[in-house]
Image (cartoon, rainbow, N blue to C red; front, top):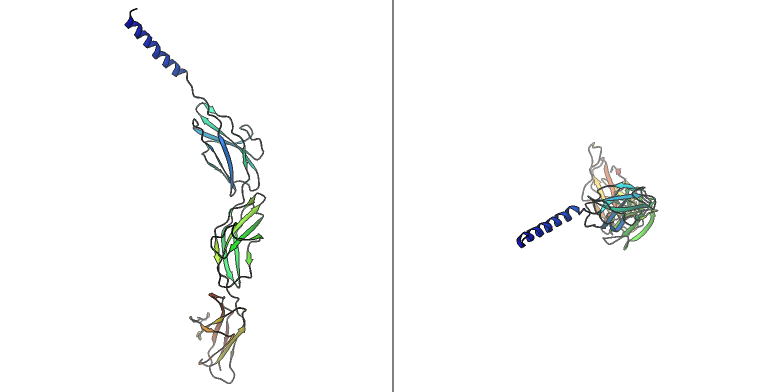
Length: 302
């Protein structure tokens, strides 16, 4: 065999060895995922892990008993990373392991991770103003055993910077409050699993108390005069009197705006038409706040 032929022969053997080695190489199952974490949320748990380079998908196995494996766990196939597991029962511990998958098979399981779902955050929170008070209400959170309210007179209230009202019922009346000041609130739900995230913030401004014992009396010995009086409201700086002129048979009196503003808790209106009915409602003013209107009263001047 001459030198040229020998070189060609050796080259062919080298190429064939490379092809042979490639055909005998097969992919291996991926390694087990690492860094698996389980983070609790509102009736849910978020799972995350470090990506496995050779994995094409992942399986999650979970159970409410520790020691979960692919044999005894409930399987979630083709899970994304991160994966949100919901809806879950609040206050129960959930256990997880994760495996990586490729064309060669499934990896060994990760180390076990666990978490307890938090209570659901209260929703539809409302703050309704009243007589020197604010009434808070919200939609009940599944699994909650009680609620906490956090309040402040500065916006941006949180469980960290707010004043806490523990074990609040739904609805909850916050009183006594300063009239004319804005109060801000968030609500959290509490269960054996802990405390939920805070609700969206709501706010309201307490109103003064509504005047009571309002009377309207025609002044004896005069023509066209009616005296309106009521029990003074603590802290009131003035009062508004809303007047409805004779309604000429209309069922609901039409009260005039702007009202008559007075300082004292009695007022005599003059220049009225004798024999016609006049209707009145009274509110109390404190700072920038005005109370709800009193019950309606009426009188007919002589």
